Length: 257
Ligand code: ADP
Image (cartoon, rainbow, N blue to C red):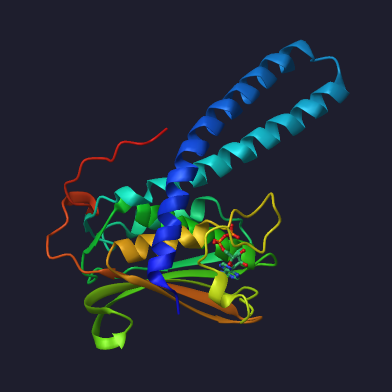
């Protein structure tokens, strides 16, 4: 089990730190990319120099990816919950999670029309699902299936941590490598990763965890080594009806970039 208070404090401190650093760092990386592009024009006849530039630009892009993650992470304090219909957004969500996935994976999305609306920040929900899809992809290097399903669930008091009431349980499953039991307690920790330094940030699941908790829900994980993993988000039912397009009235939060 997680020590939730310690986790929340860790998150807040990290959020403040990373927000400031990531923003400045992103600006520096934009200078690196911009100047590299200028040099590319000058060095057109020098293949070795061009290869060096490729490496510079690839690293700058990687750095920009990383700072985007960090900014998203630091913004989590300011969630703007609204009524969101997963049913109405099934098509868009399928597109969102499929976009970055290789063709070796089969993708199945089942978000039936009967799902209750949930009260969440729609941008953070998308980010959480993307993070889960990326993890599922990385867990299936040789191919497999990713499944996104959701169902209405009523949790009784005392049965499920400290939450009770009506939730939509939305699960992302993969048929991948699974999570070893000894690392299972750490996967939601910020910066915990088993991936190569240029692949993982260790921030994906901590975003997922923070998002679910701050929405008034929770996350569970079940995993079997060699068979696959299912991560389930419990998101609270919204009493308000979502607006057309599956999303309630809500101003877009200002971005920090
Ligand atoms: P990152 O993906 O950058 O490593 P995350 O916080 O998303 O950061 O995940 C932390 C770690 O949890 C991963 O490095 C991996 O070891 C493990 N993990 C997460 N999702 C899965 C999954 N679907 N299958 C196997 N391992 C997973």
